[in-house]
Image (cartoon, rainbow over all chains, first blue to last red; front, side, top):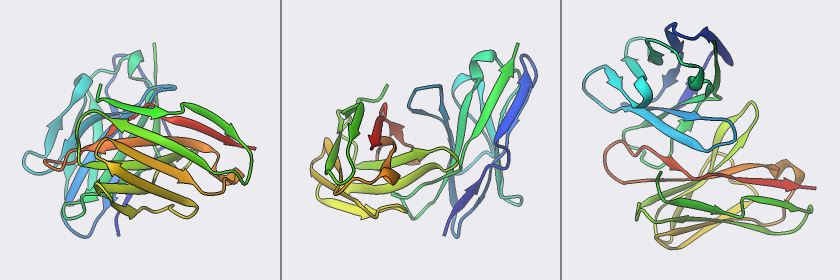
Length: 114
Length: 113
C-alpha cells in the first residue's frame, strides 16, 4: 500500500520569504514523487517530479523539491515567495512498478501575504 | 496546456438518475484517469485506463463505471446518482514513459439534489 501525508493544512508566508510545503510518503518499492498546484477555480498543474538521480529537483515557476529517502520526505521549496504563489498544493506518490495508481495527499493551502 | 477537455463543465441532476461525464484528449496519451475532489479528501482515484478497453478500479470506484472505446475518450458513468457523489470530477492523462506525471482537465462540477 502507498500513502502520502501533508501535515499542514495551511502555510502562511510573507512575500519575499522562503517557503516550504511538507510531504512525507510511504511505499513498498521505489517511489516516484510529484508536486501539483491548483490555483483558485482551476484544474491541477504538474510542478515537478522525482524519479531517480539528484535528490534536489527543479520545476516550474522557481519551485524545487528535495527527496530524502531516510526521512521518506519530499518537501516543496521556493527561495522567495510571490503573492501569485498562493494556491493549493498537492503531493503525490506512486510505486515504480504501479504506473496507474498515484496516491495524492489532502493538500496544503499556501497563502503569501504582501 | 495539455489538450484535455471535459464535458459538461457543470451539471445539476436528481438522485437516482444516471449521469455520464466525458473526457476527451488530443495528446494520444495511453493512460487516462478519473478523480473526484472533495474538501478534506484531496484527490481520490475512481477508475483509470491503460489502453482502449483496458480499465481498472481506483480507491473509490463503488457506484461508478467507465468505458474507453477510443484512445481519446474516457467516459465516467454514475449509474444511479446519489447526493454523496456531489463533487468536482477531474480527468487526467499521462504518457506511458518517464514518470507518468499527470495532466489534468478543467474539471466538472456535479451537484446531485
